[in-house]
Length: 83
Image (tube, rainbow, N blue to C red; front, side, top):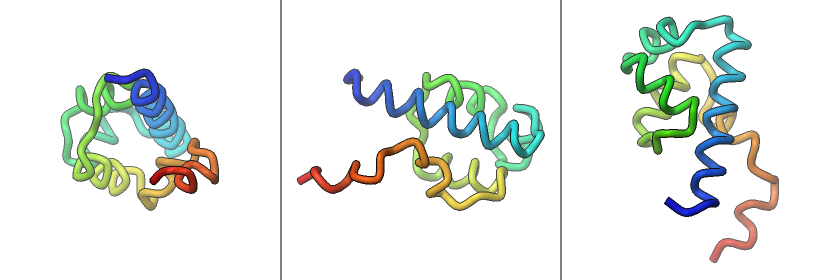
C-alpha cells in the first residue's frame, strides 16, 4: 500500500472513531448496529483495513450519518486536481 493510501485510511479511521465516540457507542454497539464484526470496526478505526463501500455504508447506518461525514478530513480541493 502506498504512503498516501495509508494516510487516507488512518484519517478515515480517526474520523469514524470520532463519530462513534460522539454517538457514545462502544465498538460492540457500533458493530451490532452496522451488522459487521467488532474486529472490523477496530481494524477500520486503526487504519489497518481498507473497507469496502458496503462496509462504509453499514458503518454510516450504524452511526446514523451520511457517508460524506466519513470524509470530512479531506481538503475541499482534493478532487479538483485528479485527472
